[in-house]
Length: 120
DNA sequence: AATCTTTGACCAGGT
DNA sequence: CACCTGGTCAAAGAT
Image 1 (cartoon, rainbow, N blue to C red):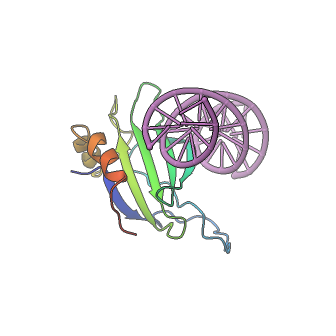
Image 2 (tube, rainbow, N blue to C red):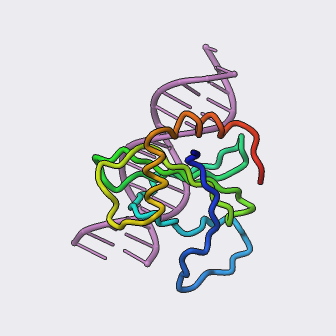
């Protein structure tokens, strides 16, 4: 009953990862069966974390996806799903069920919980 | 050439 | 009223 899910990166193996000293690199895009476009990224000073904003590929689709992770721990990703989809996903994944559940109740508790206490 | 990602700037709302 | 944070849009760049 929470749109916030903590997942770990490493789902995709890139061709060549660059061993940069800076760990401020965002992880791969967690494919949940839907297609998303990143339309912004901002560092939330109040939380001390980086937030990325994704929108559904469909113009008619109001579904939104929000990724949040700490600049020091890009391995811990907080995935927040917002909105509902107009059509079924291009691929049926079992995780899609989680998205379906989010359609009933998601944003009010998620938004209210973002400002609350949290762990790293 | 088409598609998607990235960064910066602007705007709105809140304090 | 001024300042700050969060959020969104746009254009350019990269693949």
